[in-house]
Amino acid sequence: MMNKARVATIGLAVLPLLIPSAVFAEEEHPRHERFRHAGEITGVEAGQGTFTLLTRAGEELEFQTSDRTRYRSPDGSVQGIDDLQQGMKALVAGIKEEGTLNALLVAAGNPEDRPDRPRPDVRAAGRVESVGDRSFTLQTRRGELLTFKVTEDTHYKGIESFEELEVGMFAAVGAKETDGDLVAIWVAARNAPEDRPRPEDRPSRNPEGRPDRQPDRAPDADEQASA
Image 1 (cartoon, rainbow, N blue to C red):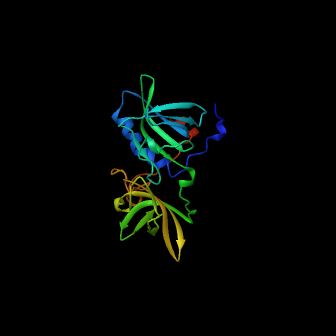
Image 2: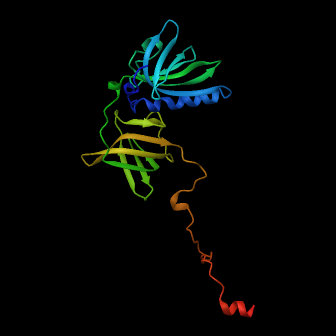
């Protein structure tokens, strides 16, 4: 068996691609045993619709593909089993039926396909207050209002593009400071729960008219005697 050390960590650019279809696999096939494996592709038999993967745990597993299988890659080059190559890093999700590992999603790519993203100068999280033309304003948990610009290089998680970003969403942002502007490197966004109050709307811990709680105290000796 191949040495475990050959299995490199899968690039961050590939990981988010798995999430939507993994959910599909779980909801569409609730009665079957589900699986998710990550590792390095060690062989491809396109004519048989199968490929093998050396997992991070050191197992070599064979997966069966079909017309149900979906393919993802950072650059869109992997459209089918014919595009899989030995040495690619991959995440595979699917269902196990009668001992066969049926792949419903294959997210694969070469390590060099991973985009090089700069380290953010600023990280912030909070509620999206406004969305403009290629920019948006975020109210952080501390009450600050920060405006971020987006570019064609901005990476998104939880949403597919800037056009899906909406007022009221909760978002986390990593940005670079460029010429006095905050330019978003990545934006992770999701809908905020409707029943969760905003920080400024939450009641204080001791609202007016409510007596403050006092710590329990030991009974006074005189009180005990009078009782």
